[in-house]
Image (cartoon, rainbow, N blue to C red; front, side):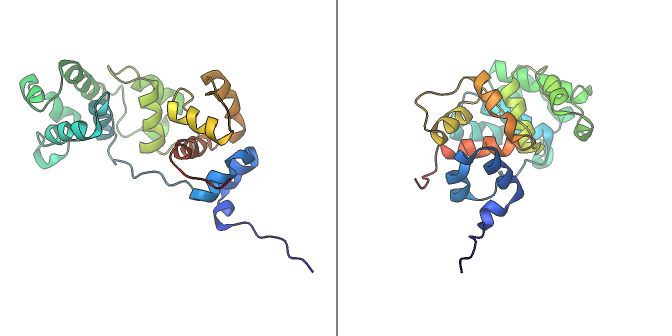
Length: 213
């Protein structure tokens, strides 16, 4: 008598199971990593976006040092839009922000303060509406908005087709010679709804994970 092979604990995860049903090519990365494990959110939308702006086009160590100096300007180390708007440009410059980043973080704080970005009402907005509001901020593009949706708001169905890591992970998982174009990747992502964020995470991790053949 033969016994049917039981699914592994990793594949039993409902999100991972959905990804595998949509595309068996994800099997090796799901087996290697198990369920999706996103990094902890910042817990404060303004701080998360402030961090994203500071880190743009900078190496991690330098960006971390600048962010720490900026955060130290706030009483208690907790940044708020109103407190940032009260700071002088001289203090922001002394913390290490370039003129362009000063303008970006001030615009970010302004958009939070005037309600363009609704600090306490993200749950009432759809993904596209949040992106539309965030990209009004100087220095915030669609990619930054999508990362915010995935990692800070934990939105489950975001598919960042312009992201190099997602495209490269897809290429690796499917053993392709070339990266898929964003328009192609958009179509490839449809079967993963409503868990495209998870599919994106597996693609990212595929670029730095040794997987079984």
